[in-house]
Length: 456
Image 1: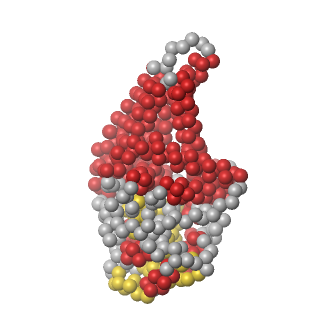
Image 2: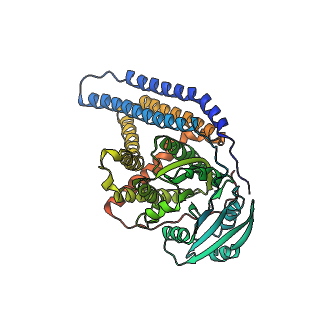
Image 3: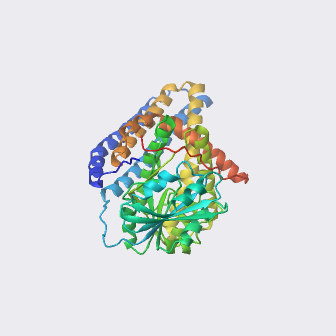
């Protein structure tokens, strides 16, 4: 089993600073393209058709300006986080940690996941496997792993808990409540952690006000174009955004594949809840509203399996969207809180904006401007629009790949990322939103494991 170990953030900062000038250049070029769009605005006599054409072109320019503003706000905040990042830790602070692994039909990935947990570069931890009523050989494999296994720093205790099916939340709660440690690392059944994950995460808990630390999730299986697009999405759309959120103190989701929690914080939040399909978002919001700090640790890396078929991908995003909406609705009473709760209000609204409002705007913009191009022959204007978006995406991808020391081969996929991949995902989010508003019943929809061995 091989894992890519990321170098010091000093090197990442070096690459990031060199690329800032290119990011700025791409932004100026994009603004220039917008100006060109407005300059080539058709000279028509006053008519309903001419007014519609001119209004459409102006609307296109405004949308592009909003897009550029959104890009650069996130990039500047993310760069601020990277520039002040430090991985220095206190070697005297090494409290015992329990790793909670909820399992449901994980026979293809269980042994590989546990193997990655046994080589963590941390002296005091245990592994608690919680089988949530699996129907495959998960229970058999899990029980065989129970006992003491050889780890990097000596024997590691592996506990196996077998329980009736009750959902991922109940499995996580069972493991956390069984644990006697003060800190719990919650991961997924297919998570493959890099060795330094606990060590770089636990250092943040020296501050007693920190309730959770979100890790850095990356795609493990990269053998297909669809998974490579997802690998770029995780680097650019999720981890860059989380860096920006951390810089502003606005983390809204501690991801399921890797999140370290103070047990007291989870207990005060009422444990994981099973009344949403996004238990990680729900718990994160509850922790924030209870006054706990939530941070992001980019070197706490978990490689996870991404869907390899379009159907599996859309099913996953459908569940994510409905779960986020459920979490937002559950905590909606806080969106009009007092001024002192301003950050929590922003966190809730940003969650809603990124999951619902922005995807809706993206779908509408694509449909509107394509139809305008077809009806009124504005193909040049639409081409310039797409060119500016593609330029932004390529430069942003280059920056994010450099900062995260990722595969440079992911950058060309940025051309398809916005125009094809994001649009398809956004359409799924839109459908999920409609079904959630209508109250249509849904099931968990577990992702089928493939048993990927290593990053590609």
